[in-house]
Length: 277
Image 1 (cartoon, rainbow, N blue to C red):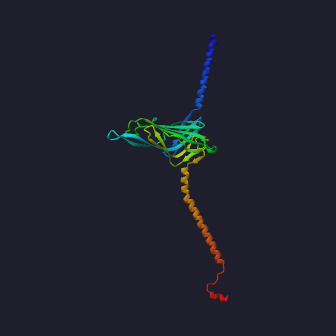
Image 2: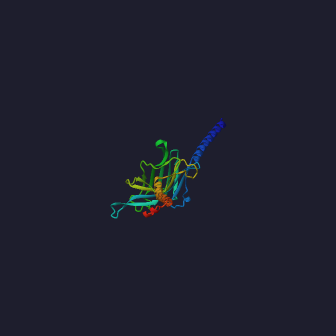
Image 3: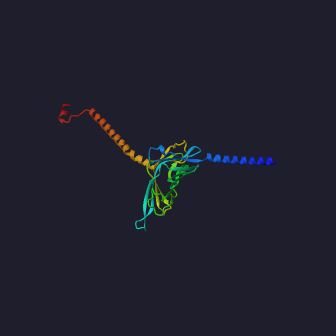
C-alpha cells in the first residue's frame, strides 16, 4: 500500500507539472512583443514600431511625433505662477509593447525610464451601409515634469496624464493602412489643471488590424489633406493642358479657314472690270 500511495502521489505531481507546462507554453506562444524598426528609416525624425503576435506582425506604426506641453514655473517674485511650454519629439530609440485583438488593439511607447508614455488605442466598427472601418479611439500621454531635460524649473513637479475624449481620428477602411504626409494634430486634456497638450503627427503610415504580410503595410488609404494638396498641385497643370489644347484647336480651325478661303475664286474689287467679263 505504501508503494502504491507513493506511485499515486508521483503521478499526480507529474500530471500537475504537465498541465502547468502546457499552460506556460500556451502563454509563451500567445505572447505579443514589440519591435523597434526605426533604424530602417532614412528620416531621422521618423520612428517605426511593430507589435508581433505568434511571430506575425499584427500592428505597425510609422510616424514622426512632436509634443507641446505647458507647465507651471514660479515667477521671479516667488509668488505668482507663469506657464512655460516644453517642446520635444518622440525619440527613435523608445521602447514599445502592445496588444492585438480582433476589434481592439493598442500600442504603448515609453522612453526616458518611463518618464514619458504614449498610448494609442485603436478600434474597429461598422459605419453606414455596413462599411467596416478602423480608427484611433483614444490617445493618452503620461509625462513627468520632474524630468529636467524638457521641464526646467517646473513648479511642484510630478507625473501627469493627458487624454483625449471621445476621439474618432484617422478613420480608415478595414484592411488598409492610413497614410498622411500632412500634419495631424490632437489636443489632449491634462490632469495638471486641465492644461491642453498638443500632439502633432506627420509622415504617417499606420495599420492596427488585418496586416497580410509580416512587416508590410497593406494598400494605403491617403488622408483627405494629402488628396487636397495633390489636387492643388496638379490643378494648374491640368488647367494649363486644357488651355493649350483650346489654343491648338483654335489655331487648327483658323488654319483650315484660311485654306478654304484661299481656294475660292477672287472677284475683282474694281467695278469697271466687270464690263470686260
